[in-house]
Amino acid sequence: MSPTFDAEKLAEDIKTLVRDAEALLRASADNAEDLTDEARNRAERSLHVLRGQLNDIERDLKGRAEVLDDYVRENPWTAVAVAGGVALLAGLLLGRR
Image (tube, rainbow, N blue to C red; front, side, top):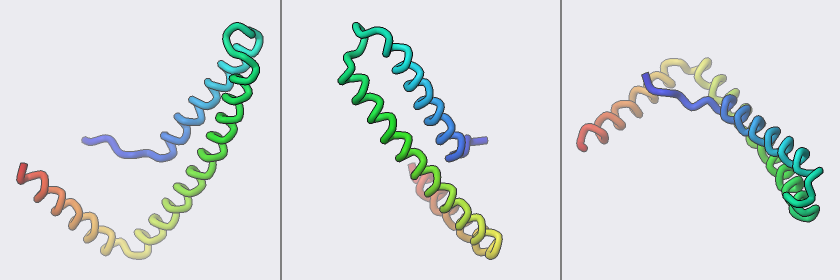
């Protein structure tokens, strides 16, 4: 069975990465030798921007997933036909190699 794309898991992993980076910055704040104040401030601003972008992406993905879910629930046979067509085309393209 092939792995599936899980946007929620990806978003959670990125949030964990951001939290770890913030913890690293806090830990290094006491060590002036490791990072200068300017570099630390720049990194903190970048993390703030990244967190905002991540929240925007997460909101967008959830919205799109809800729209897709609603469409599939309202048109299940159309969704099955589209998925079958895509699978057929992928099979034909991969079968030629």
